[in-house]
Length: 86
Image (tube, rainbow, N blue to C red; front, side, top):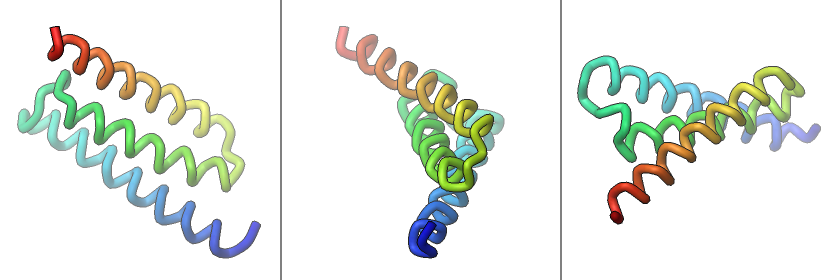
């Protein structure tokens, strides 16, 4: 794999990790609600970034974990949007 892709995937992984930790901090400190759009968006973007990284690294168990994590966050976002529009 070209070094450029390795670099991009590394940045995506670090940013994803920071976002997931930020989401955990925000929910644990009570600064956001677990049902908020912000919380689900942070988790979705974090899982997406880590998924890019682990796909390049060929770490398939982690890929599956983060794809499921991202799908749950996306479901939460879509559900929140539907509830808000009703």
